[in-house]
Length: 499
Image (cartoon, rainbow, N blue to C red; front, top):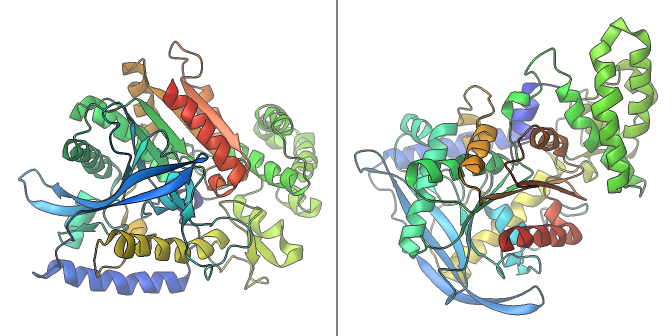
């Protein structure tokens, strides 16, 4: 296991970029740099709004779909960036109607995945076995949309979607492509939208997926403590919460091996048709107990490794000889290649039971991109651009960046620490009415659920049972691509909003 795996694979949607992707981004970056440094950057389209209807929760809901832009300005008032958002609002119900702001992760991912995959009024199928880049990019009514109980605002950070920087490369990295500046300008974008839409009196929720889960508690605390906007609740989807608990955080810690094992076991149980909460409770108990103790014993107890090898072989379904060679310490990359090797396929880090053919099965290292990534970029990008330009009529000649590898490579991650967890604790402590829902898929190896389990169990109770709720569903990083899991997620979220 390496720190690179957690910093790239765990941040939504960057597993292993191919040379082709890297070259494409290099070319694109060069072109964009020349454009941004030139004096004739094309103006953004004016905000556009249309009326649509979708069948959600068994009934037809009429809503307004808007595509608009919010300017980002520096301390001197100079416009340095333009953030594009997509909003779905049901008219006539504010200010009592909640509004939810949604962010994906990466860094470098647009909000299209939560929009067209999870909670928006329309959805495009992606993230499941058999999905392909050539699938028709047709958006259909999403029965699991949250629009029947909250308005939705999907925000694309600078460098993603159609959002863009207006300054040179060095200033762009300083203003937008680092952990702390990212939180500050995105929090201001939330505030600016609330003022622009006249919704400061509405209940407010922040939703983030993967690195968006890193953003969510930090944005909430920034809004609460610095900008003067209270947040009623947080929803963190497959969140990347604690960089400090990563692979190489310390040579003394068994946490990296503990965090991944339950998700490997869940995938194995699912393949056997035996995945249940009860079965996973036993897996978690072993991971916290005998597995952790035997890891800490190490070579001082020769029988400890033998016990680990036997149980890890049983839990993962891997070849016993392989598990023995690795001392029962299985990294995610090895698991994804070896568990499907007999089929000539490789698993996705986002859901290890979603596979694709391995184009280089005899290579000692994976040379292909992630199976889920390769299948989702084309349909989601095409569907979103079609919606924005054809349906809404927000015209642009710019490229839409559903995933920007260039942004991800340029990102200054700083020193790994537990800032999102610290900010989450402080935000909850300051507001006794705030509620938090953290959700995961059992099979996710990019942001494993067990990391959040351990983090939540170390938090204080804050006076009320389950102020911070953790729910785990069948599926992977984008578990919501499974209809049943999406429905359960919606039910748990709606209960949070009602309370």
